[in-house]
Image 1 (cartoon, rainbow over the protein chains, first blue to last red):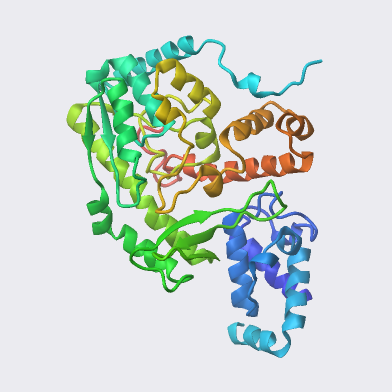
Image 2: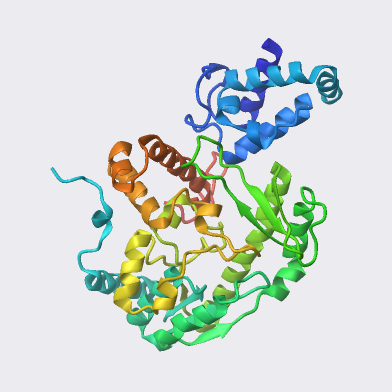
Length: 96
Length: 333
């Protein structure tokens, strides 16, 4: 959990936040309402999840309830990794 | 107390006065640039038709040139409607078919190559468009999907990953940039200025290509809601055939409405939402006026704010940095 959150915060900080620290962002803060993510940013986030953890994010899961805060992203990635078992974990290891 | 928002708030009280004011503004601005008339691209849509009429009023028809620039993906009626608009105001036109330029620069090839990353069968005879899901119907991210139709009529739909999406858009933007290049060619040879044709909704929300249709010397209707553009179209005598045609993008090879590609709602409803955002009208009140739920209007408001953030880059002029080493660039204020 902590490792995924650290990765997600680093990704957000490196890609979407010009001034300020991604660490200061509240875990439950909406990334779209705070102007951190736009629709292009969501595509970048999905690409990050796919490359970093080997997850495929299907259309029906590319939703605010899964991706619109640090906490939601972490929970979503964790849930998908747990459901994907060894295969997903192996993919994550390959791209790490 | 009457409601603060209804379609009536957008109606121009005196369209003829608005027309004269814009024509006078065009004349003084273009003369200030020491240019003698105006060039504009004619798409057959209501915006460019209104602008050609305003330009004819401002400069006289002989001092205006309409440039018709169809390409391989243009709708069949684009050329005829563009001509119709120019003819209605006695404005001369020139046809520049840009298909050859686009082929030479690889517009279609680069676009199709990106599409094949998600639809491997995509090839000659196929047609496509980008579409967005509605923000009104559900709380979801607006992620582009590609809809492709095979020559046998079979349709495929796929969400575009980042790299494919960016390449499709980048390749397609050649169209608007090529058109602008030709508008400036004619403007330079005639010593005319180039007129841009965005309405307020498009200008505010970034519905244009930077250095493409976003480039111009003067934008005479960028302060007008689309509803008001239609009002001027009627007052100016823009042909009914143009006024009754639903707004399209005319950029992709499958027919595409502006709502599919960009806006959350049809233009008249978007106008009202934009007005509400700018005048501090609550979502609940707009919802009553439009027959929507409050939370649906909240989502449209959020989409308006998100598009404004993206539009900041599109509107930004080149930034000449001033650093300690060289001071301010020459000519900087």
